[in-house]
Length: 180
Image (cartoon, rainbow, N blue to C red; front, top):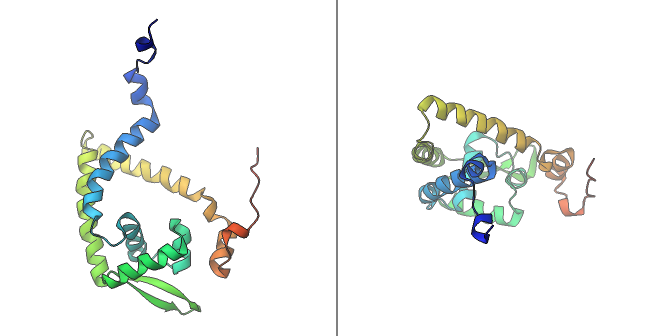
């Protein structure tokens, strides 16, 4: 058998490969989404912060940094830029005057609405091979899987709650051993 025969890719196998399919979908979506969120301060991270602020999920600056996996210092600069753009505001947390709550402004809410409409067009183009009902079902199933994976994220464990409240550095906490 020649080397060329050994490197032949069976397209049936490739199309059944989850990683390949997710990669193609992600690249298709990312190309379009990049142009939509290019002028949001902080790009994709800024969009995530704005979404969290509008949804009310951005309780405090530290909690949001932990949730999104963004370094606290980077988060500060990102919030500065979003605040300068008039999309969010930081207010003292009534429960802890040292903490800052992240709130969306009216301009931020309107901007997010416009961005989400544009992103929906990108999604529809990427999922264009599916009928409308199948697109809705696909989105629903994908959301279920994503929420499940997110819930298994180690940042959701009890130690991260303590870190959010105390400001403890996760690098100093003992690592959990994997259970086999």
